[in-house]
Length: 91
Image (tube, rainbow, N blue to C red; front, top):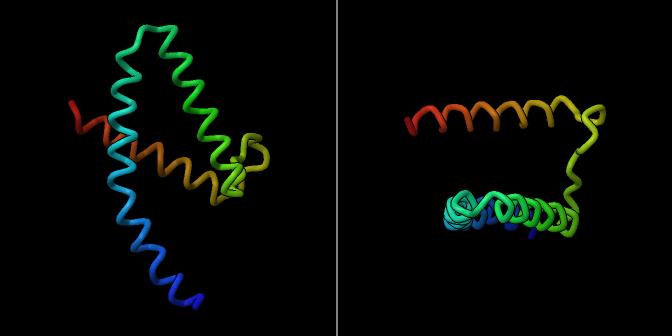
C-alpha cells in the first residue's frame, strides 16, 4: 500500500500543481492592482493563511535563519534564482 501511495502521490500533485499555481498567479495580479493600503492588508492576509495552512499540514516554516539547514538554504536560493530568471524573461 505504501508503494502505491508513493507512486500515486507525484501524479496527483503534478495534476493539481498547474491549476493551483494558475490561481496564485491570478490572485497575485488582482492583489497588485489594489490601492496601496488594501494591497498591504491583502498581502498580510495571504501570508497569514499560508502560515496557518503550513501549520495545519505539519510543515513548519523556518523563520529563524540560524536554524536553516543547508537544504533549506539551497531551496531558498533555487527559488530566488528561478524567480529572477522568470522575471528576466517577461521583459
